[in-house]
Image (cartoon, rainbow, N blue to C red; front, side):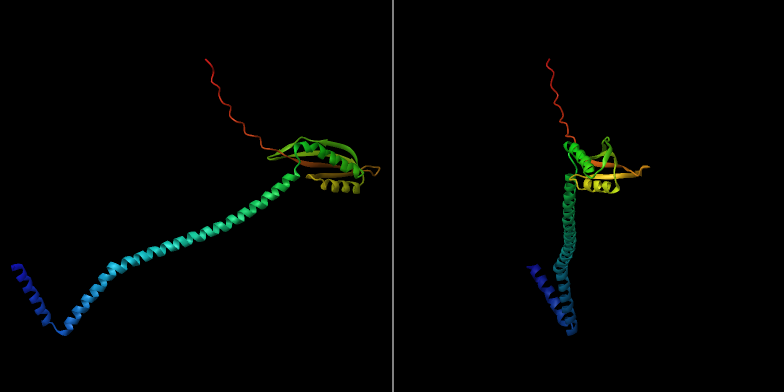
Length: 209
């Protein structure tokens, strides 16, 4: 009962003080209280949302950058795939031009027949040792023929038309006192070398006691 009476007296004193204030002072107090409420509302409600908006905006920028990077990588991947397919087709085409081991003999026969059909006389036709070049090997053939210049040109043209790759290099033409032309050169063909199959590890057998 005494606490209620004390509270009432305090309220009465507060109202008396308010009534004693001028109109301007009351307006200023109300304005201050209203401004304080706005500040509290902004701090308690608007500011956390503003921070969240800022975080979402940063996340959006990061995701946009990641998306643009992914699109760029996708474009590069498509280009790389296209280049790979082009290189693979070129490789397969080259591989078709390389004779297998069993075709070497018939290919050398084809070179010899091309010379004979061109009207050349073979003075030397000597296959050399294979030269390993990683996945393929070069097979050089030393050639010396007697015949006219046009006959030799025709021979080179026939060799170029063979289904397998044959290069003619190191051409040297000499003329004897009788005017006969002798041409020395090297015909190089190629052979595909298959990678050796990996040996399977042998299982150790337990010795019987």
